Length: 314
Image (cartoon, rainbow, N blue to C red; front, side, top):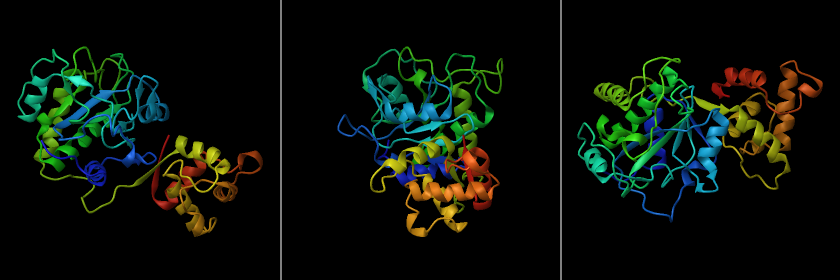
């Protein structure tokens, strides 16, 4: 049991384990404040999204839907192992669960008792991560995604001084839930279980400190292409300089370094001036006509990323 980490320490706990992170909008202030407590914290809860595709899964988890407002977790772990941070603070992810399970997590006691009651608020007590998977027990879990789940959980446990027993699945908390589930690696592969996740978390924690990158090394920046495209299409029509997607600033920094964008326009707002600068970059990459429209494409963005030290997520 402990007070919640600050948003910065939370993010650093994840990147410190070598996990790539994408920060989605103003995630540090996106929460369900005013709808219940946030803290003290007891553990990390793992879910699956019952969706496919990174962009759509991130959008649902950030915004929620009519009967359950977002955020629906703190981070979305994509198939490629990237963690997309969508909210921080109270989030609608855990719901009501079993108080006996909570007591076991607090005591770091295993095995966990069966979850046969829904009498305790989990949204105030657990960090939550939704992992992109259909949850049909057929959709496979790539090994890179499973490793990211374990490293993310280990980083938070390390920051709090918790052991692996502080990591649980939604299916272990709330009666009737089945997540996470499915085969690892490929269809027909070994089943993903929370015991396997906890075993890997324990291995990571037993190493005393993160392996790669070293704590002093910042994680590489990641730009989500789908969110960048959406910003490039929305922002020019907006008044002022509202930021639709914070990752746009990474691209603007690169365009400025190429001499295509004045520093004063490096503000995260992918407006008309940035679109014009990106059009010039596309032409530099050999595109012309309608192919050089200022809306980022994968090939031109990959080239920019290689030159300026960031990664691109689809």
